[in-house]
Image (cartoon, rainbow, N blue to C red; front, top):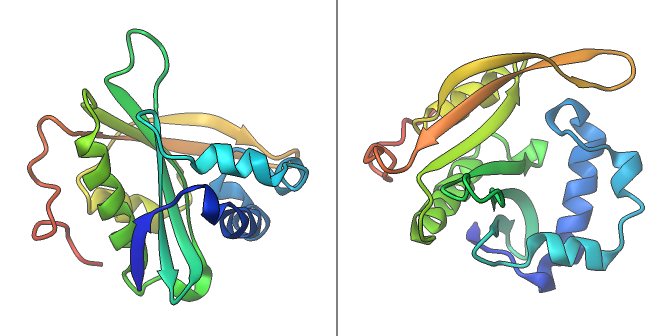
Length: 180
């Protein structure tokens, strides 16, 4: 397994993996397969191009992208000290192998290198207790639950809002992350 930052050259593989995730695990994402299948390769290149405001990490098996996670910095003037962990997806056949932990660990390490980031937020559908436990293993804590956070046309989904304080979190090191 190889874990690294993605760049625009990875956009084709990222696009395929993202569309797979939207199709197989639709409740895990705010977007839809129907919306993103129409996006161009250039749209995905822009989405994963590394900058001070966004990072995407991928996990590869040989040369095949099998897991991703992204960070986006808030663009609001009074909120630039925080950002969100988004677009986390791991192919089902790779879940439980440890690659997702390595991808998120690498992403958090890279976020620490960004100037001024103090807080990382994320949202998890409350029914996805495995994902909640996964993020808790990095030190994320639930600070609230939003009822009816998403609606797919048939069903409402509540979301746990989770946060990780990067300034006060010496917990998140390779040695301290709890294994599943």
